Amino acid sequence: MQMLTHSSFPIGLLGAVHLKNKIRQIRPIKSSELITIRSELGEWRVTEKGLEFDFSTHLMVNSQIVWSEISTYFKKGKFAHKNLKQDSEASFELETLEDPQLATSWLIPKDRGKVYAKISGDYNPIHISKTLAKLFGLKRDIAHGFGVLAQALASEGVNEISQNATQIALDTVFKGPLFLEDQACVKLAKSNDKGLEQSFDIYCGKNPKPSICAHLQRLD
Image (cartoon, rainbow, N blue to C red):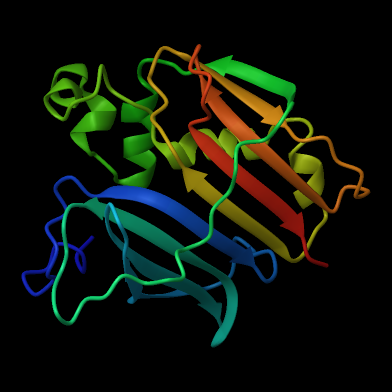
C-alpha cells in the first residue's frame, strides 16, 4: 500500500478494485523460518473498460523463492494516450462453471470484516462499516475476498488438493462482492483427475452469478 499510495504512483486508488491473483507455493513455509518479502510493480494493460496493473510479491528463505504471487488491480475509465495502446493479450480469465456441485456453505458473520481487518491490517471502510460501504455504492459492508477464499480452500472437496502437497498453484478471479450476514456457497466442478486439480466458484446469497472463481492445482 505504501507503493500504491506513493505520490509518484500515477493512478489514484480511489475506485480501483482487486481483480485477480496468481499464487504459487514452491514449498511449505515453516513457522520458524525467517522470511524476506520483496514486492514490486509489474506489467499493465489498457483494456476497453479501463486499466489493469499487476503487483508482484515474492517470499524468500535464504535467498530462495518459496512462495510468489501476482495481484492484478483494475481502474475503470478512459486511459487513451499516444503512448498507451490497448494490449491484445488480456490477463487470464476463469469462466463460470457449468453444472457445479454444492460442496459447503456458511453464513458470513456481521463482524467478519472487523475481525479480519485486525489480522490483515486492511481497514478499508467497505469491510467494517455498513454506512460507509453505502457511500461507495454498495448495498452494505462486504467481506474481505481473501478471507472468504481462505475459508473455501479449507472446505471439504477443496482442501484435499493441498493436503501433503509441496507445490501448489492457485488462480483466482474476484467478480463480485460477498456481503456480511449473507450466505457464502462453494460449488465444485466435476473432476476426474485423481485429485490433482479442482475448479470451484463461490456464490453470495441468491445471486446466480459467482462472486469468486478459482482454480487450484497440485504441481508435485
